[in-house]
Length: 128
Image (cartoon, rainbow, N blue to C red; front, side, top):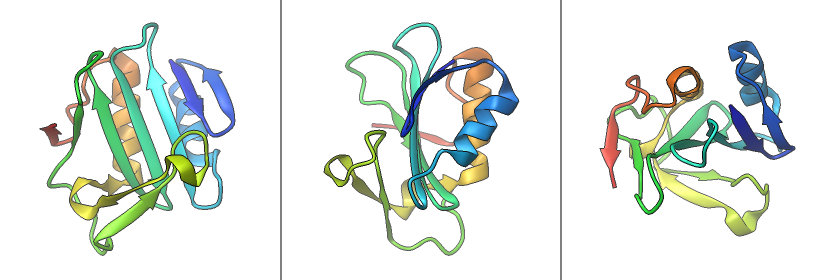
């Protein structure tokens, strides 16, 4: 897997290394990752704000992708702020709680994607 994040690019297929990277590369409470196999598509973008995550699956070039639905963690505020992989506010965005999952669910989905480069079945997806 090719992983692009706040600290650069990393390559590994080891689940423990992927998990460690997803849990430790941070800018304060924020982090962001683009995860792909040997080609540009499909890929997953995953963004964390503390223990809440936004995950987005991009199946092919030009497709707007898929985002989670119906998996909102308990107690999440209406909108949550996320940084992109450049770590700046210029690429930052806010998302409604309805599109968010807990961090452990997002990490599990990334590991599922890393195992087969297919849309993780552990997420309830909504096609955009």
